[in-house]
View 1 (tube, protein in one colour):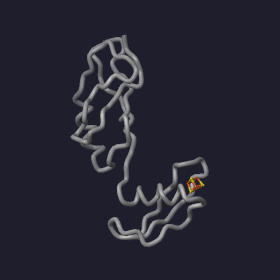
View 2 (cartoon, rainbow, N blue to C red):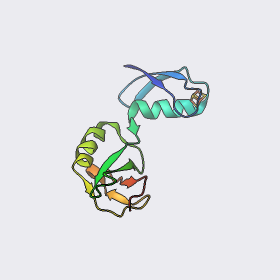
View 3 (cartoon, rainbow, N blue to C red):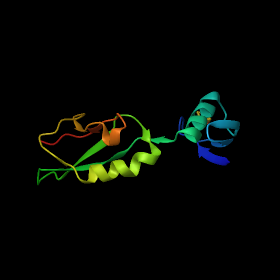
Length: 118
Ligand code: SF4
């Protein structure tokens, strides 16, 4: 299997092609530096994403608070995590970095506020 991955490690945005099967990587091409090879290899085997979205609050004046995952989540769990987040109503006051969803979808990763609501 061949996969084209755009490296997001630096603004150069190299288009890297990874060829392999499962966790067995045969070749990595298109990267300018070693960091790109490491990034593309990890992305090929275990793609992850930082999840950024909003959660409803119980405050009428500020009905949404921005949130993000503390760490990158496995890409295949992102939709499940969004389902959980959609059902949440966060109690105010909320401070920056408050944990609003603990251990989302048993990933060991928390969803934290990236804004504050009084
Ligand atoms: S491969 Fe290296 S130079 Fe290219 S985007 Fe990734 S980090 Fe930047």
